[in-house]
Each structure stands twice: as C-alpha cells, then as structure tokens.
Image (cartoon, rainbow, N blue to C red):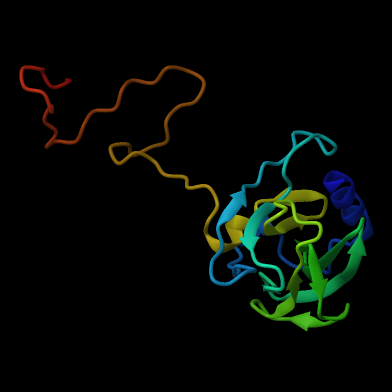
Length: 192
C-alpha cells in the first residue's frame, strides 16, 4: 500500500515552479519533528521505479506532535491519500512529503522552513504501534534522501593519508602510513 500511495502522489503533484535544481544547490533544511528525532528507517531508493525500496525516511515521533516544513515553499497537497493524511510542500524543483499527518494549513499557503504544517497521526504509521513520520523528498519523479537536507545523510570521507580518491575497478597499492606511524606490536617491522 505504501508504494501505491507514493506512486499515486508522484503522479498527482506537479514538480513545482522554476528554481535551481537540487544538483546545482545544496539546500539547508530543518528537521520536520522537534527535538531532532531518531531515524527508525533510512532511505533505500528502489533500483527501478516500481521496485521495492524505502522512498524516504521514518522518524520516531508522538501522536499529535507538530510536523514542520523542512524547507520554505508552498503547500500543494493537504488531505487523505490511500487512507492516510498527507501534506506536500513544493520548493520549486523539489517537494517534500509528510505522512501520516493531519494537515493544518490549506493548499496554496506559503510556509517558511520550520512552520507547522500539521500534526503526526498514529493511524497509518509505518512503525505502528509507535508513531513515525514518513518524510520524503522528490525532484520530479526522482526520490532523494531527505536526510541530506539536515546534514544527516551518508558521510563521504577520504582516508587521512590519501590526497586523491581510491581507484575503483582495479587493485590499488596500499597507502603509505603517515610519518609518525609505529607498529602497535613490538618486533613487527613497519611497512615500507
């Protein structure tokens, strides 16, 4: 039922007015629940449009808790879809979705990041019997990881001893340790 809801939602809602695409900007948003919630299930995009996956994140909350817009935009949907309350806020080329939510702001309302758009419902929660907010982010029909909006997405770091990314697809030589490296076990020679 979750996949059908999101597929229907993606076809019903326009991508929004002209704005810089996500690839050109790095928007900074706000958590839709306060205080910062626990992430119960992370983003797991499907390999194909109709394949299994998790097209957003589930955030642990409490029934009746205020749900806030992650980014400034316009409310383009607020109502029941496939038996659960859904609120959609469009941000130009992208839109964020919130469910299950009892919307408190009418369609067409302009909201700032952090403005309350509704309250979290228990009915329709992905984490039942706990209340969870399913938070999605889309650009057109492409699902994005909403945790990227709040700096909680995947961390991409290079090892400290590398000055360039590792080569993918063929064996790369082992990196040299930094100048002050010493083996932890005595009697073992340091690598050259």
